[in-house]
Length: 142
Image (spheres, rainbow, N blue to C red):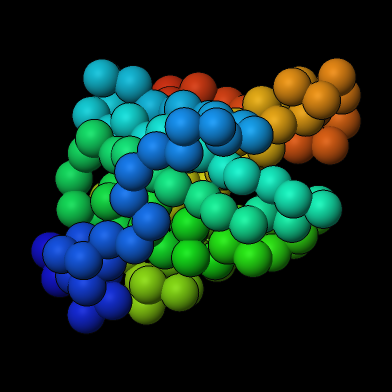
């Protein structure tokens, strides 16, 4: 399996690793059957994601997609972060092998789960805004 230089860089030197103790939103996706579990933490101020951290248990591609996804939403508005797609994460990493595409899906879902949690904490139903967040079975990662 050939990985791009960007994937290898984000795997070997992941950005934004860790937890935010007073996070405004936390999202966790994946399961042990899949083998990849991602947890995203966001800090929001004035409708902008001012900080984002992640903890990922999984393969190199899972770590790289988590790292890149955090880089793509840091400093962005919530609306911009909601528009992030797994395709954008893959493109930013110069592609992923087909069997690792599910990692980018999980990264997108983890961000949306954190945003959904942010809305819930603020008394807002996230479903009309964020949409349904599918479980890992939906990403065909078997």
